[in-house]
Length: 172
Image 1 (cartoon, rainbow, N blue to C red):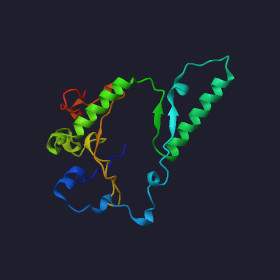
Image 2 (cartoon, rainbow, N blue to C red):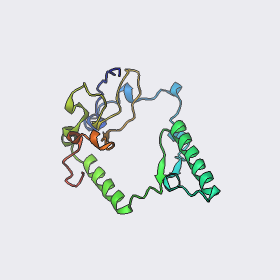
Image 3 (cartoon, one colour):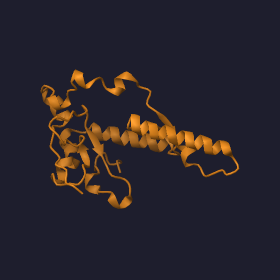
Image 4 (cartoon, rainbow, N blue to C red):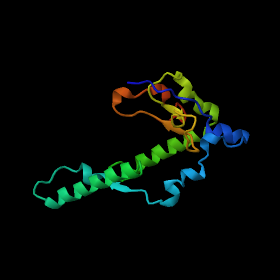
């Protein structure tokens, strides 16, 4: 596997806190065209219960519905790179707890979030985990104006707990 050089860009919160002018790495040029999110906010919705349901050999409509949902998923990933999953079986209570923990993390001071920052392990990592932004592979690359927390959760043996926040205490 070829080693990809990852460059560092400033954290969005870091820039916003000091009132610095937005660096060019975050500015889309008009010739790049508008963001697809500004054109169409109808993010594809995929019903995971249809895709993940057990086979029903006696029901031809089940197979058609499943194939249709799989086609929608493929198109969503090719055209958008994301989708909204419904019918996944995760309870509203658990999703609410996860949202509150994530919100609590992002409300922490920058110094606290940087304890699990992407630079925590140095620049020699195979993949970017922790608090930060998308990998910067070219000085011409345009970044989203956001900071993120990327955590590997699957497969289980790839989970790297050094990038999991200790605050808020119910995060894990």
